[in-house]
Length: 276
Image (cartoon, rainbow, N blue to C red; front, side):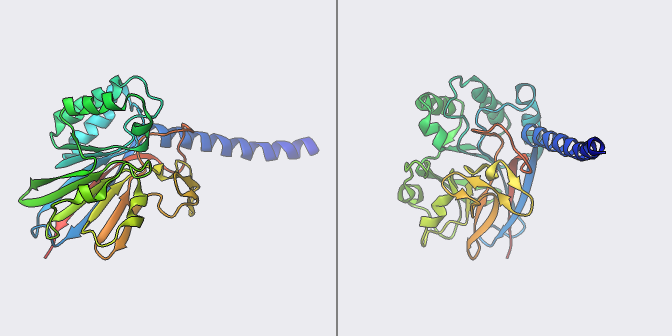
């Protein structure tokens, strides 16, 4: 009788373990596109700017030669592509795979912009990586800005080098920008938002947290870099003051533990729409 009772307990445990393992495999090895719409009076009414954010790839390859990822990027037809750090892992020694990915991305869209993450700064091939990105047509945005004309709108794109390793210089990044134009700030680490005061930044795009990699349903991330357990800023859209937002993408890759759970790999398409 005891043996039969143990068997009855064992079967649900096996089913649950199998289901969790399958979920880990799916969330880690397939990606989705998270779409977010935002509105601003700084854009002409009826117009829009589509921004594709890639972050925390950590040298990961999806499918054969990145084809699923590249094909999806082509389908989305973004106006601008931004990469918010940790393209490689701190332990990455071969940059070939990421350079091939970058070449294919630039072939789709010439407007590709990059800010560094903590793993770039910790990687001994950092300079080689940065030079390789520039050689392939990517614009580095560490502590600088650029003004883009997109769909009859001025987009002020600024970026800071990684905040978590103290390489950021927000003053340099914001130098010369005008408050009447829409301002997008790229910052690998979202914690930068805690030091902002009166800067006229409409939207901050960050990564770094991986959304916790492992999330608990109805609770959220278990842990995130620089924030510890049950972080306040883990993934998604946050309003840091009226009509000013922080968006944290949970990213495509992994680090430390090579798994995701209840937190599927993703890239994000943010559409800024003009309104009266």
